[in-house]
Amino acid sequence: MPDCFLHTAPWRRIKARLRPTAALLLLHLVTIGSVRAQSCSGVLGPAVLNETFGAGPTGPLAAGKTTYDYRSRSCLDDGEYTVADTVEGSCHGTAWHEAPEDHTPGDTRGNMLVVNASYQPGEFYSQLVSGLCVGTTYEFSFWVLNVNLIRPPGACGLLVPRDPIIAMRIETAAGVVVQSVSTGSIPRTTGPTWVRCSMLFTVPPERDVILLKLINEGLGGCGNDLAIDDIQFRPCNPTLTIAFAETTADHLQVCEGGPAVIRSTLGEGYVNPAYQWQVSDDAVNWKAVPGQNGLELKLEADFPDKKYYRLLCTQAPNFGSIGNTPCRATSNTLSVSTQDCARFKISIPDVFTPNQDGTNDQLDVYCKDFISFRLTIYNRWGSVIFASDHPDKRWDGTYLGLPCMEGVYLWVVRFEYAEGSRPARTIVNRGRVLLVR
Image 1: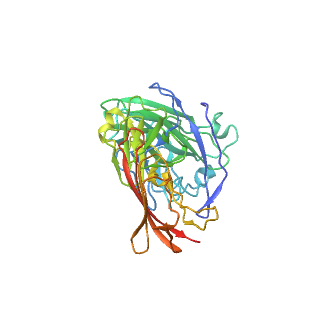
Image 2: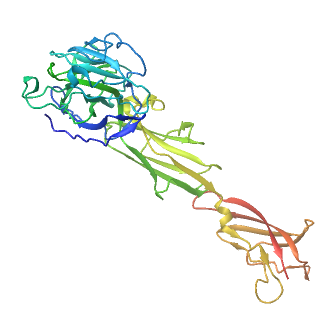
């Protein structure tokens, strides 16, 4: 029996019935290939194959999917299979677990493949898959349930019980074995326990079609009875994360026209990665940022609304279809919005009190980093009653030497400023001030 991690999960009630428990089994590479069997440590993409065996009444599998003989009955003899939503515990003198439902989460009367293995090796399941991405690693996985009850030593005259042993095999379309992994013996358990088995496979150059097989490697007769469900073949993409250089937050607000830098980190998995940055107005519809194919994105935020950014990565041979291929890593999403920082370069109070008490007798204008400056004050009829070309020249609440009436006055500030080496900008700000005596 190979080294494995077998985690029996607590029983839980689903659809008002006890669901078989779940477990995880890591496999050993036993025949061909140099990649150790393992589960995907990155991010699984959309399933190329997702065999759940459907739901409700059904018949035999399609021709060529198994070498076993179909039977519609629940209790099977050696070399037979059925597709059913339950496993009957009364079979073979109550030798099987009672499994009230399949493994697929959330389905109603979902089916599984139930097999009484033969004495000779045979194919439990076989499926051709195509449209694979060259150089991409895929995870081949399935869930298996050993339906045999734990029996006393010597049952059936056997010192060692006959339990399922399954080879996960990948072949070329012509039937040449490329890689094979064995589960080792799937152990019997006190309650019906689903076990997940998986292996990784990297698609070689110029081969986008392969044949997936589950092969019986155990002995039949008084044991080696099993159920199989949820066979999947999915791309295993590396983790890809992006972050602002300035902050760990997922949103950044910058000055209009100001810079922003987004950096990326790619996990293991791609030997020859190729990148494409994307931008969106709504985080739903994406388009490529022209010419941005590196690990870092430098922005000049010259847009008025919020923008969303993400990064795609794939193996270089698949770059031509990076926008729609499942064989890619997709980063988290960040957003950038702009603000008119020029308005923060000027500040004018809402109220001033020119009553000669030595406090707030003049309208102070706070403005910095300006090249030119012009303040204009208007009365309620739109007449100019004060103008200044420098913040230090302040309005004292008078016009032509006479105190102005209490009330609201309009002001307009027009000033020019520059940031760094960028061209000078002219800003016009407007507002109101209340004169109180």
